[in-house]
Length: 437
Ligand SMILES: Cc1ncc(COP(=O)(O)O)c(C=O)c1O
Image (cartoon, rainbow, N blue to C red; front, side, top):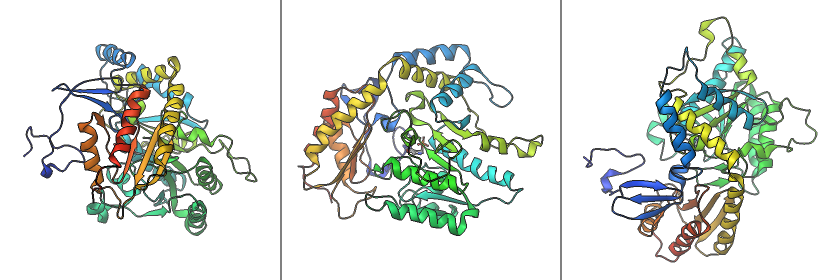
């Protein structure tokens, strides 16, 4: 048994890891009980946006906790949820009209999958559509539906017999985009009537190795879906709230409607959009699934059995909603997107120096996300480089958590140039250490 008896996520306790005990955090820094200072270069699993302990969010949480901490969200509503729904929809592309709240990224995805299926079942008098299309290397979460649409591999292999089949599209690596687009066209031509939706992480696949692809490829995937009348789901759990340089990654689809296509209702707007992680600025768990009017309408009826049968005990928790509202206020009151742009430039200065290194297979950057892929005969999540580099960087005061042979930086937006350079310099230094197998 670990002491104290806590089973940590994505942790092999058999290796006896000793975890630093974090006592306090501020801005981009974590402070341990024994006096160490650590730059949080991965925004604590991609959640912290404006910095740890941002006073506006902390105060909003304290105020809301004193007023209304929680109330059942079936039969009742409340101001923080209503204001937040309006705030999110005001920032989302036109065509998304309602918000369904849940607790985390996986549930935001589960809700989207169930809405897509449920919408078809209601549209077609019970003759549902059983098939999702998803990208190779996708990661959408750890619950069963989310695992099913994700890449099959070490995360999911023992559950494989229980996961539903998914049509997998090849990842649009540079030069291979046509293969992805053709696979999507072919699938729709051959069995379009069975496809409930396409689900994608827009512009960057996170846990799959920070794999990036350009907006015009996403635009063509979305346009093809639209042409065939098949919904598409943007999983912006990681990319939302500025990570890719725009507020939402799908904002970058504006103006990219392929020439020659008939004008489309709401352009390339996704039918469902999943949010979590940064939604509360990184303070509290909250998920949200934004849905188009058409998806919402499919569930409207005088018959109770046609409702959406889904909910969580803490759906739209008022304190989490108040935190999320305060985070949106930070976007309007502080130069957040300017910080995002600056981080992108600072990344580029450092990445260009690494690009030609013999141990570097590729460098990638989109928005505030910078990734360095180390050369490895056999990469993948379990590559020994990850724990080795993680331990090394932690001993030097930087939190990095490579995905196998891909090390990345995804910082809170308040990070200073100096703090960011410290993380980059550690990556450069680690290239000179003996290579783990
Ligand atoms: C794109 C994407 N979707 C869904 C999830 C799952 O989110 P959560 O860990 O909050 O369940 C993640 C988590 O990394 C993610 O990156």
